[in-house]
Amino acid sequence: MPAQSPLFTDLYQLTMMQGYWHHGLHAQEAVFDLYFRKLPFQGGFAVWAGLEPALEGLEGLRFSEDDLAYLEELGQFRPAFLDALRGWRFSGRVTAFREGSVVFPHEPLLTVHALLWEAQLVETALLNTLNFQTLVATKAARCVLAAESSRYGGQVVEFGARRAQGPDGSLSAARAAFVGGAVGTSNVEAGRLYGLPVSGTHAHAWVESFPDELTAFRAYAELYPDSTVLLLDTVDTLRSGLPNALTVARELRERGHELRGVRLDSGDLAYLSCRVRGALDEAGFPEVKIVASNDLSESVIASIIAEGGRIDTYGVGTQLVTAGGEGGGALGGVFKLAALDGVPKMKLTGEPRKSSLPGAKAVWRAVEADGSYALDALTLGEAPRPGDRVSDPTNPLRFSRLPGGLTWRPAREVVMEGGRRTLAPEGLPDLQARARADLARLPAGTRRMLNPHLYRVGLADDVAALRDRVAEELRGHIQP
Ligand SMILES: Nc1ncnc2c1ncn2[C@@H]1O[C@H](COP(=O)(O)OP(=O)(O)OP(=O)(O)O)[C@@H](O)[C@H]1O
Ligand SMILES: O=P(O)(O)OC[C@H]1O[C@H](OP(=O)(O)OP(=O)(O)O)[C@H](O)[C@@H]1O
Ligand SMILES: O=C(O)c1cccnc1
Image (cartoon, rainbow, N blue to C red; front, side, top):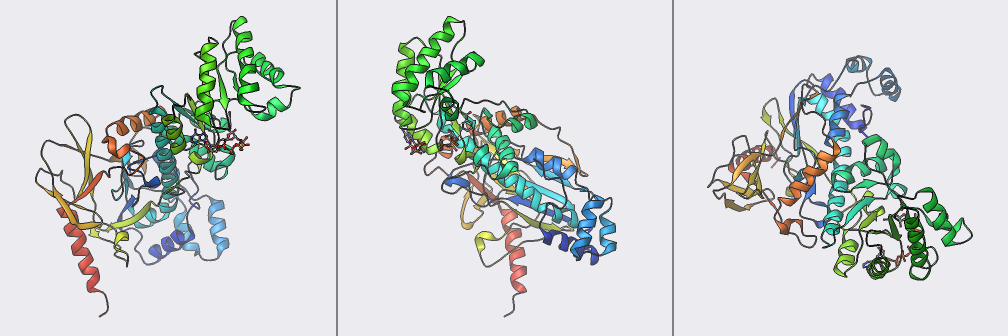
């Protein structure tokens, strides 16, 4: 959900805001870039998500009288500054990748051109929304790529509400998982809020609440004759759940209905799914789907498929909504000042990996003749040309010359002007479709889970030269 309160920010943004205002610096034209330095999950790509809620949040940002009263209570804010916040709104321009695009480290994913005090305030909420949703959309895309690698096909449903980082974490994870390719969620409120398909089966407690498993299965099927998915493992998957499900499937058919599916929730899911598939097919129920759950992740899904598993739908909870696994947990996106009143700015710092790129930059994506993506490049404006040199953002010693035969497209567009969205809100199915199409355009090695090929983002010489010049100027201030 968008964080629309202007108090959803770190205190220091507000204290700096007051400081800029106090010193008459607040109305300088600032340029801030939002980017991350490292791909999550040791993967080869990220799926950019959260832009819609982020823009919605920016557009609606206002200080209410309650907000101002609370700030006054904190005792650090002067009445004249609080007065200046009355009627304040975000009036900047935002340039960004379209939501659902595949994105890579070191490229500005979103750039804010705004008055310094406006841009400073919105850092926290922008990073909160975009870091988390990009992380979860990426995790979902990884699970979906794994599921779809089966020759029988496979889909992913988000099951994580009970294990998510709080109610708001669960809702935005459900949204982001859908952008990344999940077909729906078990979270009904997420379904309502975002218009996502909701689906589900039943729990062990249902079976335990009846005298025996068959009675429980029959009772559920009676109530939901066209959408029943029976959980097989409360007693014993193969020796009780499966035969009872077959009995119910036959009884439903006699009444003119079909059992929708069965769910496996423990044991060796590859082995069990093969046994269950075989039994269902043999009994004349090839259309009954097999759902699996139990601490699934992209690597477990890939393993089940490599073992010949026959699962149609993977219900992924904890690992998806908490974006677990190596290199997961959080996306380290940052928001860095790149220019102020036209003067390029950068952070140098003791750790070269963490220095930022000064100047207002354009991001370009090179497309091969067959439509696949070749590399991205940052310039100070112009499209890259064949023969231009591009260097690795973290290592100037690694550079190459751009080949010909590529079509260079601006990777981003203006999505907000004067604090108002210029891009009509896009539907979530469109965002999911964009993610799917973009992933398909990546070199296959970049989509690989293990040791993926690293997609190249290069700095054009104008960007690298500006960085070196600003860095040199900053070093000039270092005390001998
Ligand atoms: N064929 C498989 N290949 C790889 N991993 C699997 C396979 N089958 C299941 N797993 C995964 O192995 C892990 C452990 O499975 P197991 O059934 O032992 O879980 P458990 O948590 O001990 O069982 P329960 O949920 O009944 O307590 C789970 O993450 C599950 O998704
Ligand atoms: O495992 P996740 O990916 O988080 O997916 C959701 C899990 O939630 C349910 O389990 P439940 O809460 O009943 O716990 P249990 O299966 O561990 O007993 C369901 O049966 C799944 O196993
Ligand atoms: O519908 C289900 O089967 C479900 C939903 C949430 C978590 N575990 C299972």
